[in-house]
Image 1 (spheres, helix red, strand yellow):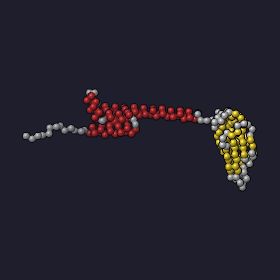
Image 2 (cartoon, rainbow, N blue to C red):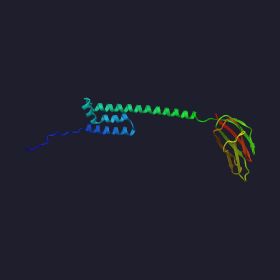
Image 3 (cartoon, rainbow, N blue to C red):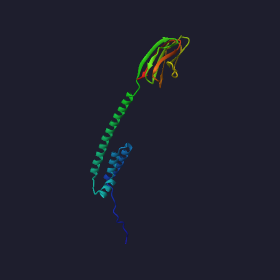
Image 4 (cartoon, rainbow, N blue to C red):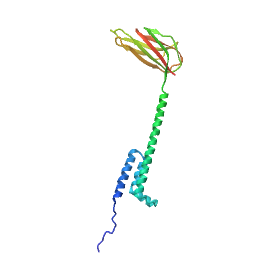
Length: 205
């Protein structure tokens, strides 16, 4: 007696192949894009998912039904992603506005001009941070100039390193420096130079 293999041969239809390829492709796209809904759409399209649903939930979803569900998931995911991006943009814009509003604003409290070595008149400082901006003009055409500009506190003297401006020939010089952690009180500017100069004093409000 001949032993014949009576086990049925399983056939694979074209639609199953298409669903496998489509499901895997969509799932990979969802993983690459970090979208959970697109990943779920890919899983729904896989034939094995329908097999498990039939086995455990006793529900048989047709190929068309699975495609419709997958499309809906992708659409919902796209809308949710767009809304999330808009929310992030608004948060970013608000953060930028807050950053701009928190930028330090300087206001001028004194300005002086003169020529040669001088100590300016006194002025009141009420903030902890002061910015000094100085310009010098103009040296001889044959040699450059060196100028030192320092912020001094009356009776206390030294407040920190000053501003140095060096030029070549008769060109104008300009420089800026900021003093921090100052205490309120009366201050003045000490200028050491051989040329004309202008100094502007500003403090943070």
